[in-house]
Length: 114
Length: 119
Image 1 (tube, rainbow over the protein chains, first blue to last red):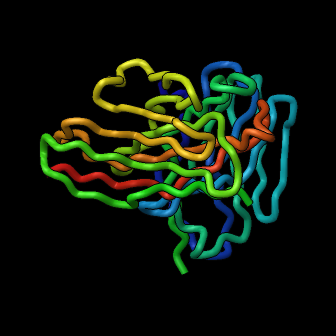
Image 2: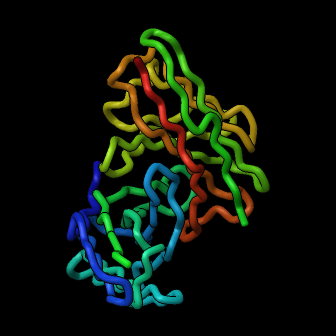
């Protein structure tokens, strides 16, 4: 079942602006990950945040996690046209072995206009 | 870094035929691989967990006789869509975990996906 829900479903911004995407989930998690998918392609891992972490940075990406609200946000700063893609959050409940299953949200389609 | 190769990247077949999709970990061994299905503009739905040397674990609602999974080696898992029908047309994506580093907080590597169109 899909427990991650992203909003907005679609986001259109101008180059240079910041883009914020949100993800909510329903059950307890081990970690939460954000992935990027270009149209018709596979997924690229962006960042992982553990359940005991509240914020994480990677380049122009900033992820927050609020386990009390069961929500996460992905901020992309100074967006570029090349950032245009679908962004998915995915939650992991278990640890190791076959319990390490990703449950994906519905995704946010980000369009960055040059 | 870790690379997962999927083949074919796209395939068109006639209704009633079977199609095999391969998922290979190129530079690492993968005890566990995962198969996902994605409909246009939708999210990824986990179909099954493929375990090397044992039977795959299927998610609820996924027909094991329809989607045959074989994980015969530590670098190869295959998904065979048997007696394909137009409703099986979809984007199938695999992912794999590095056997040497697999733990609760490591990242899976995804293949580029295989687009199946059943006529």
